[in-house]
Length: 254
Image 1 (cartoon, rainbow, N blue to C red):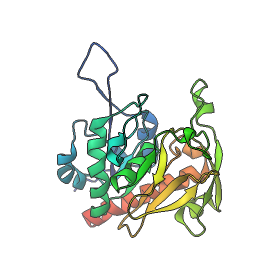
Image 2 (tube, rainbow, N blue to C red):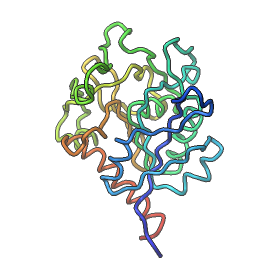
Image 3 (cartoon, rainbow, N blue to C red):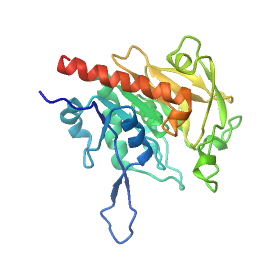
């Protein structure tokens, strides 16, 4: 039987990039697909997938990577109202709210990055600060968007990692430097989420799903950015890749 690389589902974003085309575009930032490929995995997209398709499509893949995005999780999913400045993606929200819960239930490796962490939290009943920088006592976690990407994705602050956690193992200690490119952030933790990384202002930036059957973690930073140059990022991504390989082997009996 022919074998192939473990498949990782990267839910797409939906944007109107051409105002003359009301149909819109399905998009994915290349850096996520490039990181997955560098880890020996095969990124896959299901451009028109909706929540009803999850039971059929999830068994085809060996992991799910929820990417970051310029869009925000729509506030109605956690009992609030959208801000006038929000860039929203209701199609992605509709898919990922179901995909998160199903991946956890079925033991499919799951890794959430930035918006992906926020999706995990909201899908499990948690809530978000819609503008972290406007909250008393919290830092401005946004990137300087008028600077080159190298500056935007540079290490911005330290995170404190829970002793004995997988995060501490990947970092080789209980502190690590990370980048920071987000406006929303976790307010109340979702069900079965355990906070294992916090920013200096106390904002939860890394979580695991308690008693998950497979790898199920989320981070607020962007480990996909030049991960090969950053030991902590690289080891985090490789742990996810190892989980995807193990999942495929369980499915195929290899």
